[in-house]
Image 1 (cartoon, rainbow, N blue to C red):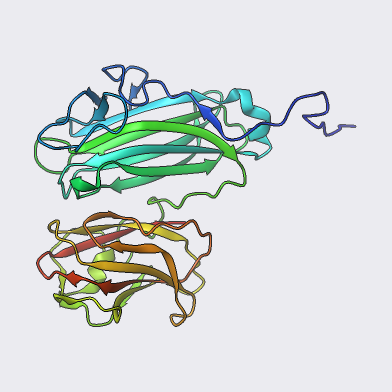
Image 2 (cartoon, rainbow, N blue to C red):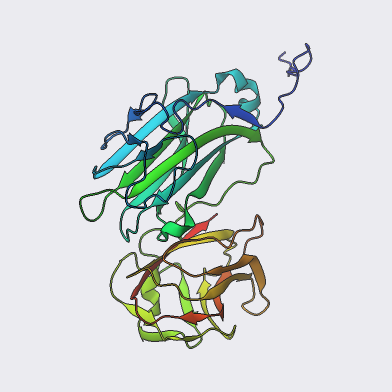
Amino acid sequence: MSMMVNPFMFGAAPLSFPINLTVNNAGAEAGDASGWTAASGGVLWTSINTTSVGYPPSIYEGSRYFSAGNNANARMYQDIDVSAYASTIDAGGAVAELSARFSTNDSLYDYFSVFLRALDASSSVISSVAQEDLFVQELSLGWYLQDLNMLLPSGTRKVRIEIHATRASGTYNDVFFDDIKLSLQDSSRRITPTYGASVSRGSRTGLITLSTTNLVGFGTLSSMVDGSNSNSWYFNGATNDGTNWITFDFGSGAALVIDEFVWKQQNTVTHGVWRLEGSNDNSSWTQIGSDFTLRNGVNRPGGTSNTGYRYYRLRAMSGSRSASPYLYEIQFRAK
């Protein structure tokens, strides 16, 4: 007859979270990409020790950072051994959490993706999550923090960090990384929404219905979720006063947690102060995070709620929106 054994029966102490894991050459301080391996389809990133004509505006930490350089695809990964925590992982007790600082240089097109992968003892991937196709437009915003985490499945013995930068235009890949960190957290840790969700990527016209109150100056609002960066529509330029919004209906039964989004448009002009709100009846609305300036690239209302909603809306609160850029696409950080 088999018997369940308590792992602490013979004196083993419970783990004390968080556990900070060692990432080799986490901020490019080695002066090269040592500690990292080139990922499939790409080449290693470059270690840089100075800023160039203002980008990024500074080095985030230490004296160096990773730059994608002139590579069309800078891709690298590093595997971190977590086998010492096997019993806790196999009992469903550990969340792996990645955080990193990134900056992009006035590029409407060059973007980065971050992957967190759980590997078994033979280095086969058994689970994976990602933040994909991200960029920030305004250099003045400095280094953005992006996080990604996952509950490690039973059998995980290594955790892989993988970062990609893709050059979609020009001769230089305008993506930079610094201060890459990995930790283990308790299983109660909030799981971060991701840009890898089906409501974020590709054509979603069959998943999301858009409507608006007097915001369209020209074009078709649904083009924001058709997966194409095309000159489809733009705002009517006016002053924001809280009475105009764009509503996203994710359909009957949907209960999505959304805490930030990527806004893609033709240029870098901003559109005043906006608010993200959620609802389950399209009538009573709850604010998500804080008011923010709507701009090209990552928009971060914030908040750590796990409450899911069927409807979300972007509400124009103050300042002025511009009719100058064509508005292309929106990607949601969702779960």
